[in-house]
Image (cartoon, rainbow, N blue to C red; front, side, top):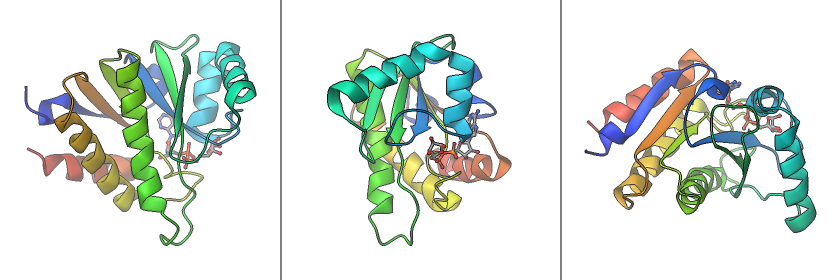
Length: 177
Ligand code: AR6
């Protein structure tokens, strides 16, 4: 299986995806919010928030670029990996590196928890205003770089809620055929 076959592109709602882990674009409080974060907590039920609160009590807030793992509650996934994307400022505040870290650290956490498949939303491209084209370039590049270095993941699914993100991710994935 080549690396291209290890990536998939889906347009829709990540809460409906059957993957070992789905990634949440959270904020550092881990207490929920709008966008995909709101959708995951709503669909997954209160067990996810309870697990997040325990993590915050034990280790404090989650820093930008880092990731933590919880139950997926009522969702079809096994785990939720909550990562905190950067707020886009002007591109001069390490936004690109910090977004890359979200993808890297989420994949590593999935591997550490014996996950074979992981689904990502377009982290930071909503409320945090990261430019979608640049975010797609970073996401696909990092995912392929990590896949090239591990045999532990069988599938990475990009789940795009909007047409614009879908087209940018598609454009980037085609570069790897
Ligand atoms: N499934 C997949 N993708 C979705 C869904 C869904 N159900 N809903 C929205 N998106 P955002 P951010 C897409 O704003 O920019 C929260 O309040 C959306 O179209 O969810 O990282 C957190 O608590 C966009 O492309 O996350 C933080 O405070 C992408 O998900 C803050 O928002 C990310 O948009 C994080 O902002």
